[in-house]
Length: 233
Image (cartoon, rainbow, N blue to C red; front, side, top):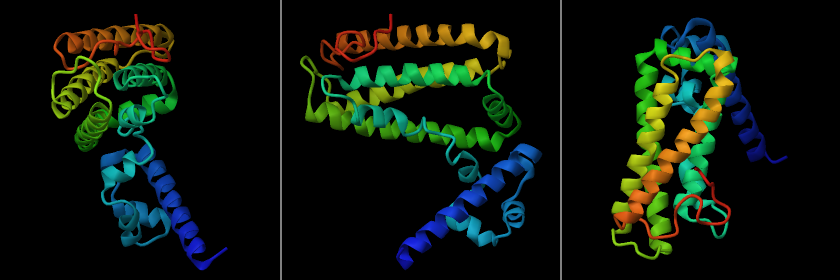
C-alpha cells in the first residue's frame, strides 16, 4: 500500500471514529448539550481534527443521515432507459416516503425525530438541507429536460425544472412534518406505511397531470404511462 493510500485510510478511519463518537454523545446528552470540544475530548483528538472533517456541529450530526438530499437528483440522473425524469422522480419519492414512514416504527427513526423536536438548531439545519435537495433536483431536471425535451413541452426547461423541484419536494416535506408530529405509536406504523404510499402516489400523479395540462411536462410522462415507472393509483 502506497504512502498516499495509507494517509487516505488513516483519514477515513479518523473521520469514522469522530462520527461514531459524536453520535454516541448526541444520543446520550442531546445535540444541543454537546460541543465540538466534547466530541474531540471523547474521541481523543484535537478540536481542529474534528473541524478538518466536519465544518459545523450540524454537519457532524447530519453526516450519513440525509440520503434524501441527493436522492431525488440521483434518481433523475440514474433513471433506467425508457423511464422519464418525472416517472423516475415519482417512483423515488414514493419509495422514500414509504421508507420514512416505516422507520417511524423503529427505535433509531424515533430517536432521530425526538432529537429534532428538542433542537431548533437541528431543525434549522434540516431546512437548509431541504433547500439544497431542491437545488440539486432542479439542476438534474433541467439537464434532463434540455437533453431530451418531452413532446408538448412549452415551458423553458429551467423554469419547468424549478417548478417541479419546488412543488414536489414541498409536498413530500409537508408529509414528513405531518407524519412525525405527533409521532405515531409503533403499533400504528404498518397501516400508516400503506396509507403514506398510496397518498404520496396520488398527490404526485395529480401534480404530474397538472404539469402536463400546463405544458410544463409533455404527454406520456405520468407515473403509470411509461414501462418501468411506478403506477401510483
